[in-house]
Image (tube, rainbow, N blue to C red; front, side, top):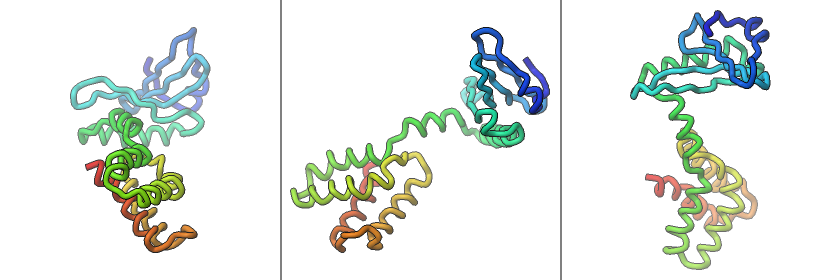
Length: 185
């Protein structure tokens, strides 16, 4: 169904039966609203990627985003699609990307357990468990800010903000923080 989407029009929409209702905007092509049988309404964008596959992405729920904000985000996504980007694929990569915790586990298995003396192993694992992973462990490597977050955390640890860090511990923590970057390459 196509219609001019307005705030009042969207408020009055209701899904019929057990199927989602899709209403596409006449002003902005590919932009629409999905109404679920439960009454939840979300702004959506449907497009074709460079391989001509039809993709749909949810921009946001009605109530969290206004209609104008959703249109602005849809225009930005459409501009990105014109540049050859694929927002749905980017979101999937974001969900599937390795976290710093995953890379730390790999660093432990491939480097700490194999190439480091027992005392240093203990210290590396302590630093990972107590200082590094609580701060940046959930960050995904595909995130652009991850590298800056790693350097921020390294600076925070080497700057002595973490109580009880000796200079040797600070130096070791800096090495641990950069290791996931080298493993990921």
